[in-house]
Amino acid sequence: MNLFKTTLGLTLGLGLALPLAAAVAKPDPATEAMMKKSDCFTCHSVAKKIVGPAYKDVAKKYKSDPKAAAMLIDKVKKGGSGHWGQVPMAAHPNLKDADVKAMVTWVLAQK
Image (cartoon, rainbow, N blue to C red):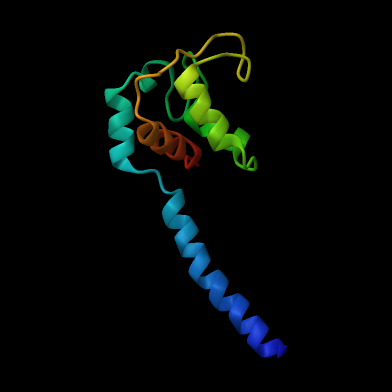
């Protein structure tokens, strides 16, 4: 394969992928509003620990874990404790799966 074509292809591919990744990683204001209507911000805040961890700390802890989103979705739905201490997180079984996925995506997008 021609080195120029390979380099050009990688450059173009990365040039298209990086802006897409940045767009996906931005926290969605509509999801934040949905979380504020729920009870999420009773125990969590973006920047500091309240009862549960700050969302920025959650994002930092799990940023390299490809299984984190699925685990956190399950944690929001079922509740539990142990990942951040012994204070239990309340279960949220009535939240729609799509909403929980959006919320977890929002949390993991915090910088």
